[in-house]
Length: 114
Image (cartoon, rainbow, N blue to C red; front, side, top):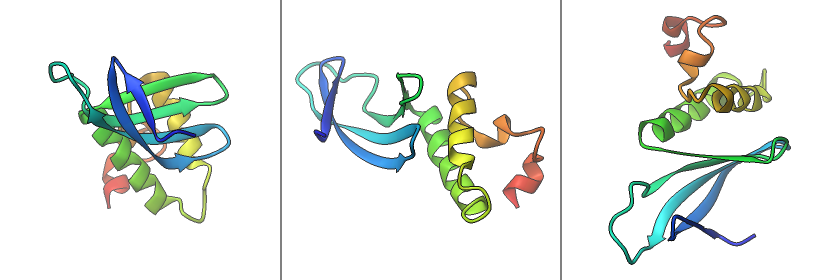
């Protein structure tokens, strides 16, 4: 696999940060440009291999995705390793990447933060 991709004519470096049978989550950083500054400079790309879909997030949504993946890793290391895929399935469907908003019914935000 090559370690770069093009988005809207700009070249981005790719670093894989999460991989499962269904999903890949990659970090994207711009590394070559010759035009005006694009809106998208760095962010995350979610590749859903089951649905053949790719989602690109940046700004606050990318921050929410990174935080949520970190939070889930700390909470579910041993007990529920499939929680990442459940989260990514729901996040890409609802276009909401903050885990506390997605799973409010299952776990209150106060409990999730402590």
